[in-house]
Length: 211
Image (cartoon, rainbow, N blue to C red; front, top):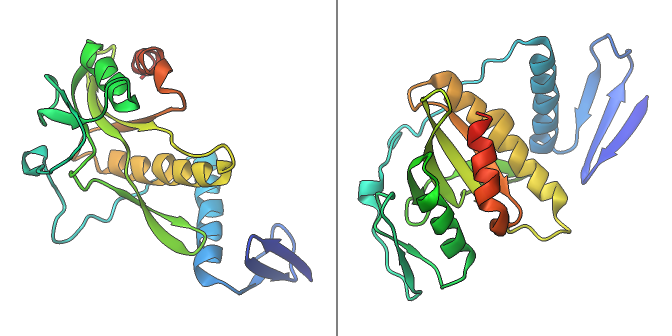
């Protein structure tokens, strides 16, 4: 009998070999199920048998920027490409730099700051259910002329939280984006993660050119 410990989760694997089914005792169901599912998904990716489909909110499957309403005590930045006319942010702030880059990029058709929009992606951190909210959502034009929805995350993770960053990235790229792209109803989606907002212009251009 082999015994493994993963974070606060203990798994006992009893009998069998790598090519045989094994009996698993679970000490924390959510964590273990998430781990097993990740392994199954990785195997499906390797063999080309991947087809994730999303589970839409039954009562509110869609929303729109037309419903965005909010109040802020912060200075605001005017927009021209966004359906929402202002973005909250101080001068020289990361919001100001991001808005400037998105407004100036000719391949960006439209964008919105994900504030008061209530757009979020659920993920599991350990056994705790959390929601991830990307900073911006943009619609960009690929070199072939097609449009793609681009989630833009201006990373705010401390350097000592790489595991949390990787967990969120895995749920977004491996699960959510793959599922919504399979559905097809809401177009194609991808993600751009920016660790330094000063590099957004270059990263945005490179990302679009390689779509």
